[in-house]
Image (cartoon, rainbow, N blue to C red; front, top):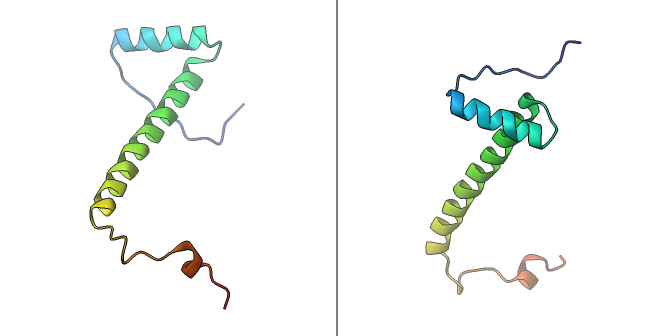
Length: 77
């Protein structure tokens, strides 16, 4: 049965493949599904690092006296 999802071929060392295969067996999923799940986690982790760094940079320029209060931002017009 054909799938509409894109496919990716990955070349890896034998030891990494064996680890991936063992993780898939442990979790009772296909090697493909385990690889997909691990990639999703890695992308989420990478995004977390990016946004944490962005927040840290913005925090350096934050000024409490120039910040808008919740009440001022959401006041009724």
